[in-house]
Length: 467
Ligand code: ADP
Image 1 (cartoon, protein in one colour):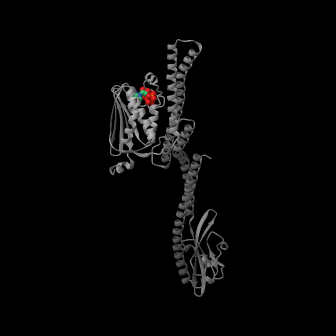
Image 2 (image 1 turned 45 degrees about the vertical axis):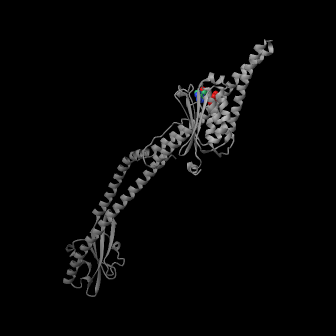
Image 3 (image 1 turned 90 degrees about the vertical axis):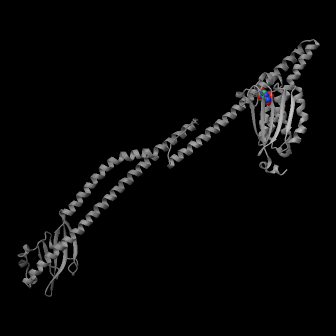
């Protein structure tokens, strides 16, 4: 059974039973009150007729011993129908509509006032029983008070209530139906959205505003859908990056291999002059070196992903003094002047990775047709900042966001000529991540480039103060 039907049925049952019960209790309460009122009235009647009987007995002592005929003559003096029973329970006189046997005393004549409600042939009466004495003889007086109007009123009230009940049920059915629809509507919406998400529509949102439980559920659901969407986007991005990586890798392999095969074929088939043989061998060597560099960098990239590195606290100045031997030849090779200014400071590094990072950045700067390369190290409050700056041709700002992607080359022809494959900055960005550092590359695309790497200071910089 669906939730809608359950809620609808519950409402109808609850409402129907509650209304019936309330109506029944109300009618009964009103009837009880009216009967109590009638009892009081019947008692007054009894008292009045008891005085009348006593006055008759006073005037005619021994009347109780005579036959009923003498009392029957005086029946007109009573205000309501009465009956008189002797000590032995036998009927002395009765002008009550029912048979005296039916009135039969049931211990009522023992001195206590008693009430009985009598229903017969659509008529309802209250019989009041009470004791009366004449000399040493006793008798039981019964008076009859008609309460048919009260009973009829109760019946018509109950019938009227039934009519109201049916009318209210007819009106409340559509109201309950609409109410149930309003209550279950948001749940239905959540269900529909869940089905659409299950079909792959991850951008689906329910967007129910409010503070009730269903709105909270919808908000949680939206949040979950948002997370799923982000995760799916992330996975799609990763899949796309892997595809790009494979395609770029194949492309980067194909170009040097085509040249190598072409030149090797030429050397095999033809007898070439010495100069041409030298030139062909030169191409094969150059492309071979490009392949070797590609293979080495790829290996480094994979190794960085797999390995755990142990970082050691080291003085930056000393590291750069050592690194100078590797940096200077690179700058010299491309005709760039080197300027280094390194402040004292300690950072946590894997020295080999740190070295690879700096050499890659300097290599890129020197290859960018610059005249000078500046390397600086400054100690800040929480970080130690290393900047590698050049005044080369720069990187177009729109390319800056992608240059750390594997195989991405801003200037393809220059990179290829210089044995690059777009892996240097991908490697650097992984090394930066391993050191929990942050890297920014800034360039206006004309007046050089600066790479800024901020290393966190050990102990948030506090330890450094004590050195
Ligand atoms: P590669 O190994 O081919 O040099 P990188 O990943 O190191 O590749 O760099 C990606 C691209 O970013 C390069 O193709 C190059 O065009 C550009 N680039 C990186 N550093 C600089 C720089 N300092 N000046 C100008 N261009 C740069």
